[in-house]
Picture (spheres, rainbow, N blue to C red):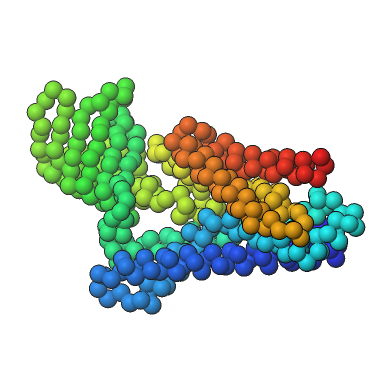
Length: 362
């Protein structure tokens, strides 16, 4: 088998080495940029040292760097191919009768294995570190930790009285306390009944207790009550999960959290999409190898390296944009989670194979 031959092992080491160093370079760049941002945000936080912010940044960066793994595979593969071409190793291998498909077997299997390991090992570690970093940020910066974004929590719940949509600005005490709460209450038939605004809501078994509530119903004058009870079927864990971004949930927990969230009547589309995206990651990395090969498997004795690099990077960027666009459509419910996650990887792989077939087999 090509992978276990002397040539296959040599190529595998070359590709692993270049992909690793490209990913490490991107990791360092992301770390420096994020550390500078953390220094800016932490300048007004009392008792926070630069060393602690450096540690906090180190907890955050693995999750961010995970998003650039496809670019590390693209860049590392292109660098390896160009190096082999410049040293005429590619010419010797091709003249020995090795086809492009045999030549691509080692890098394809290598990135396939890297994709699987990144999902089952790297992602859970990065997600766990990200959750710890979010907890530290909340304690240090409070609400200002997300001052530049909408941090509101939206919950759709079902109960014996009907349905309700609850919006809260913050959560505490393990999801049992909500602050700045607004609830839109509907009856069993889905007709709007009233809007309830409260400074605080406490979750008790089977119902919410809203304090200092203002009730507004269609055709009636607003009323202010000291306590308002709203039936619910939620648990504190389910409320807390609504504050957790899908990217912060480890791969092994996504299916369980998605099922529990859906059973509670909450929107689980983000968790389903994240789960399918992680499953599709190995194929997406393989697509990056095919794209890199379609621009790199040439003899560059007479130049053209810059055009090749530009074309490869542009193609990889287009695939990345397509992936994000499909993800946004999946999150909005326009596409199902499997289609949104797998479509860019499948199309990218097919286009890369098509270009290679045209270049190699006419």
